[in-house]
Length: 86
Image (cartoon, rainbow, N blue to C red; front, side, top):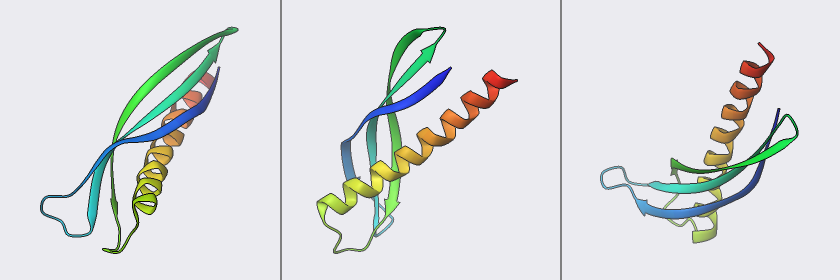
């Protein structure tokens, strides 16, 4: 079984209502899974947050949120791969 991140994009983002410098958002990640020669696509919506300086550009904010989501997907993939190996 193999997993591959094939797409990632910020769906929404907003300043946190109480924590200055924190941005929250949702990132869409598309994960491809190949098992027994069959491929299946998983469309995930991941809640993320990032602490950023006040002068961060829109591109920097999006990148920080996508990096958080990519880290979450990497941890998910490692857990799924460990579960299969057991």
